Image (cartoon, rainbow, N blue to C red; front, side):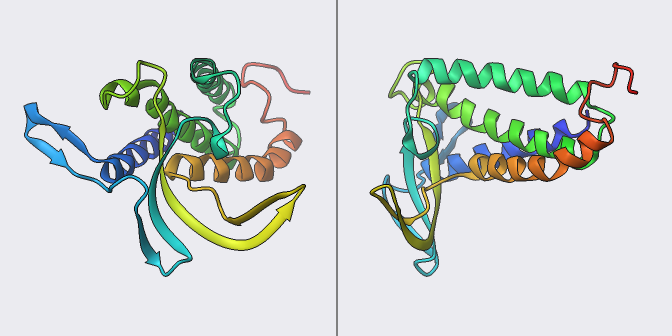
Length: 190
């Protein structure tokens, strides 16, 4: 279960970067950081990579299915399921477990925003927060079914880790399945 350290590091880096972008104020500790003004962009690599502070009220790409409370609850259940599954494959291939740990870390990072940020930043009740996004990357223009896109959706560290984790999961799942390592560790293998 040492791969959970990777999940914890992802959550810490994700939350630290979000707070640096959003800003925070903890008078009891004498800590304060202004962050970026909402909607402002700073060029990092010209117009190709920018830091743009926005907040996403829904899921990926701003999709809102089932409402905020439902999606937060689903994220909690999914995170618990990933932890349980990680335990069951604790002797499985490291790449496979790391992929799951990345997905878990990213899911928990965004879950913290959804569950607590509304309350902590005094704009919404518990479970109704918005996810802080800030990586803004350009790519080729394309149109599909009448939808035109010229830049990638603004994302954060958690989103990037989930995406990379899913890609790694697809790559490592086949080799893990061939060795039987995706089955729970307590089951007998034939």
